[in-house]
Image (cartoon, rainbow, N blue to C red; front, top):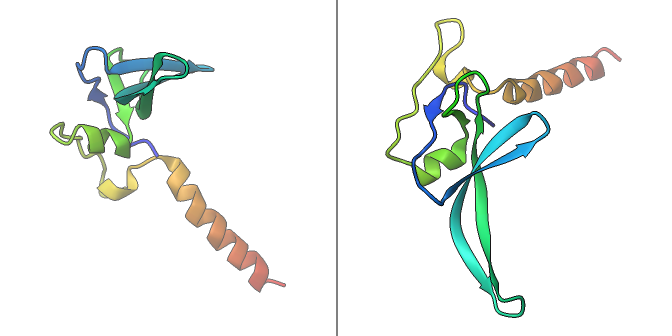
Length: 110
């Protein structure tokens, strides 16, 4: 789930990387490294902290991992009276409730 707001990409040199999959660029944060003695090299432990915005370079749509690793960064609250702040999340979240309600209605009509 990606939040419907933009924040600056953190400036942690060496810990932030970009991973392009298809047309989308994901921003990853390296939180640990593990040494593999049998292969004699380090393996980075990474997690995705957001999705890059193609219209605004240097900005990302954060996800909950961003809040976990960067608690000091304030995520702006976006929303309107018609769409409260908690509802201004990704549309992927709202489709789940819609699907469940539609399924219940379909079962009751039989």
